[in-house]
Image 1 (spheres, rainbow, N blue to C red):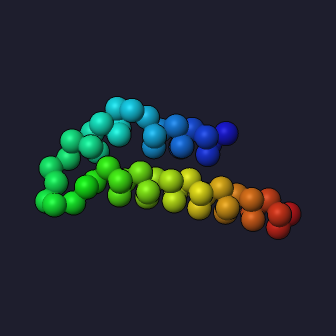
Image 2 (cartoon, rainbow, N blue to C red):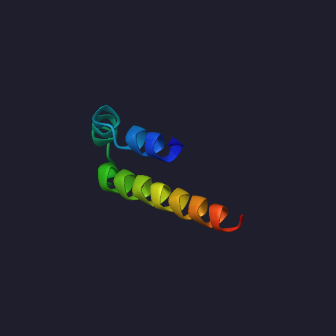
Length: 55
């Protein structure tokens, strides 16, 4: 349940809007943020699945 809460927090619209409006220095922060957040969710899911398989 904590993983779902983290995913909902990372992808909530107010946070995405804040990231989208960051000052950019020829770098698009939104795609970088979305890719990184998705990678964190996938990584945590894989870690939880491996942790459960070890028991």
